[in-house]
Image 1 (tube, one colour):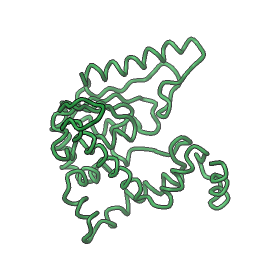
Image 2 (image 1 turned 120 degrees about the vertical axis):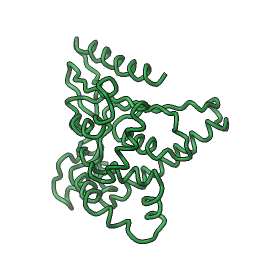
Image 3 (image 1 turned 30 degrees about the vertical axis):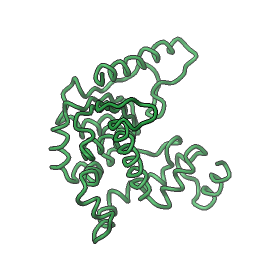
Image 4 (image 1 turned 30 degrees about the horizontal axis):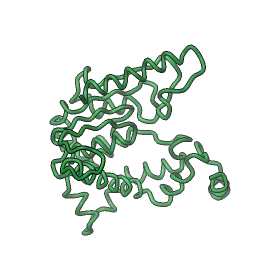
Amino acid sequence: MLNLLKVRNSSLGEISMSSFANIALSNRLTEDPMRFFKSGYQTVTDIIKLVSDIRKGDHPLIPATSNINIFAYSIGAFLAEIIMMGNPENLFSESKLFIFCGGSVFSNMKGDSKLIMDKRAFDRVYNFYLNDFEKTITGKSPLSEFLNSNPVGVAFRSMIDLGRFRAFRENTLRKLKEQIHTVTLSQDMIIPAGGVLSTLSKFCDKNSLKVWDFPFGYSHENPFPVLNSPLSGKVDYWFEKVFAEAVLFLA
């Protein structure tokens, strides 16, 4: 990874938030920002198969059940919201979704981080989906058909920006308000609490959409840091508090 990092920096110049940890993803998304959508779509199809297998009793390890809920973090929350909104094959009609450090539309996220992607990659992805994506899906193609007529495709488009497919997004989230519970962090810089509130506060009351602020240094990428200090007890307390909240809602 360090060699790849040197190559990227030598060809593009020094890039903010560039690191050995994000070089692979940064290269791939800078080269083709459609990979953000394609990888998400692949994950959706994998989840559909997994849930279908579980419901039919075909999974080799998980007993058959129709009661499948979701705990989602970060960009996984973005994906989970789209799945719940699109409800492929009606697999998630009764599912509950607990969101931690996520929930906003894409335009309110800030994904450049040494642990996610560098600023050049994020700017490329952000500008593509905010400015160019809708133009690329005009005309006739399997991709255009999916994004224009499949509820999962429409849900993805509606979660790019608050002004995009607003009626669809708001009507769908309003129907799901009893099935979604969110905890976000006030000092989260990657998926800021303000963006989550802008996306969900119309449909969720203060009991189902909570903004917390841990009494120790934390980040989106590392909300529960391992500390060799008296603060470690507080980290444990808030870790347990988050997951107790999730268990209470999802149980």
